[in-house]
Length: 386
Ligand code: TMP
Image (tube, rainbow, N blue to C red; front, side, top):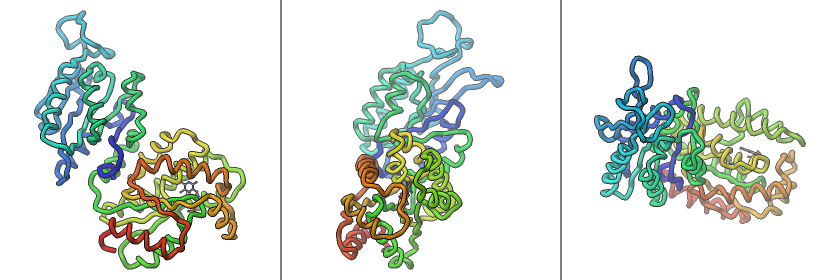
């Protein structure tokens, strides 16, 4: 989950009125009732309405919502015209109030090393305050965990925070915001564990998986794999045997298959506190489809908006030549990706993205029993009941 992952920040972004603020407040409130080893603080920015019309924004301190400060007011609400204050559209902005809020958060942070700071939002209005920008940079550099919403706009500040490699980005839309409440809470509070085995074709994943499944059938562990056996997974398995496939279609199908998997199996199991062991997950999409879609952040966003972060990724690493030998011996249909040049690129992408997760690399070119013993020792640390 996010809280125990190497990701420094969780950024929610989406168009105005997509529900980012409501989601941020929901998460803060839900998490603050739980015993977490993190000090929680932060602020949200709430719209102010009068007779159906938006007349401004207030900053609200999340630890005590009665503490409010005006961030901006529609110019029609203010007595005198021609002020030299910063403006965004029809709003006059009060950066000094944002700075008061930041001072409050700074005070909160004096007494703690482990903090989770909620900030709604990093937007145009906030970009007028240097203190705010410095505060944000300070949090990032000190590895304090940030949950923040990102406004739209092309200011350098917004562009910079939209492009951080070590962040978890989630796209909020009116259609997915209810689903996201369910899905995102699991990034902070998770009773179950999600463990994923990844590797290039021929790495030995599936053989290992079969053994794990046989030996742990009585341990209340949920075993599953992707592509799944659902409606999209079936189409995918057929497509993967074809020589020429439209990559866009393939990507969409993998994401649809995963969405179904998350909704039907992964979320319910994690909520029930179960441990799930997966043979492939969205790291496969980043690595395999990343060969054709160079924009890895785009692939990460598309997948991580729907799929919970794994708690552990076990990566089976083997030399490409050995993988190809194994594939040829397997004597079944060769899949689309089982070519040296592609497997080379796929393993390069895996190497690049693994540090975004809690991961362990295990050398896969050893006798199966040895491999099994190594994995078992690793799993025992994560799943005490086995
Ligand atoms: P398998 O090795 O588990 O049988 O996986 C089937 C193939 O599908 C394998 O070549 C990897 C590929 N794949 C992707 O390209 N993207 C994905 O998201 C997943 C799950 C698999």
